[in-house]
Image (cartoon, rainbow, N blue to C red; front, side, top):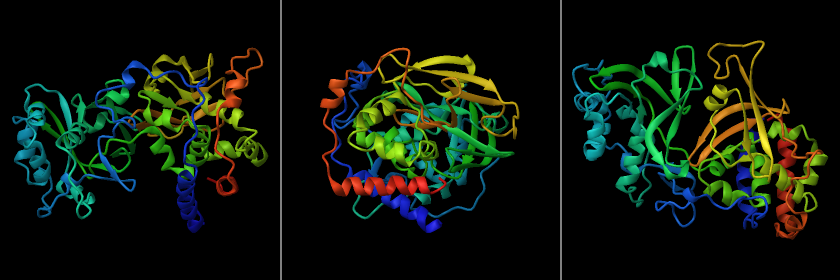
Length: 418
């Protein structure tokens, strides 16, 4: 079983490359770019990720710690000293201090009286996880600065105030989020708290005169674009990622700022059955597949705290004139009190689907996984795009190799309980 999972992971990444070149997106389904999508900081090929990538592995060369590894535990904090002075005089944060000191803007942020911020401080051992390939240049100073800003959370937040499912606003504001702050997702069980899954709080609640410091085990990496996130979790979202490539929506999802995706999981697609899936991924089914994909893309940025606060709201989709109806209700059996959805269920379209994984953060938006595929058909009104426009949009050229690989991968996913 483990071998099959590994093969599936590898095969699906191969599939994504085989499906290139990407077909043109149907103009009738995609609105024109919003004004904030053409930022001066955007690259010619879409929004630039704060970090460089090499063969899909995120690296931070300038953050590679080459000095001796210290085994000193972090101090307990000095309430009369600033956050900067606290890390500067603590041998557990030697590398972090080196990086911060070289950037006056970060020093100022950590030295301002009454700053009221939380510093999520990687200990020296956190830097050993990021290595530099031989001959690879270190990223520019502004990229490293962006990474450091991502470790500053707004407000002085103690560990007891961090709850699973919380989203922390950071000092990293991005044009790709409509100039909003990028967020950090809180995970946890009982007294254990982690950030963005992989970084654990190992030295909590070190108080300073202008905020709180938490020592963490890993560097926090600002996430890539929304499609990158989907494509690199094929065991959960492989079919939806393939549908995006097949229908030409990949450039839109990569390049558009401040969007929300509601990707159905592989298990959600499995409920459709193999015959329906085979039709949708055929040339004849492409128009229907396009409408399904468009119906799961929202042109506004919506996180679940807003949904829970409003309890009932409608969000626009890329399918012209169609919205998703979102309603929050109490769960009859609340389950474990530390679960991020404790006591709350978020239904989509009168319970047609519900959010099963919430607030997957991305460079240009957020993802909320659904446990069912939403049906865009509406018998009461005809709001779909012009069928002539859809039929005239070029799709992937008929290629037996592409189609055979696609069918094999989709069949594999359906046959497995993933």
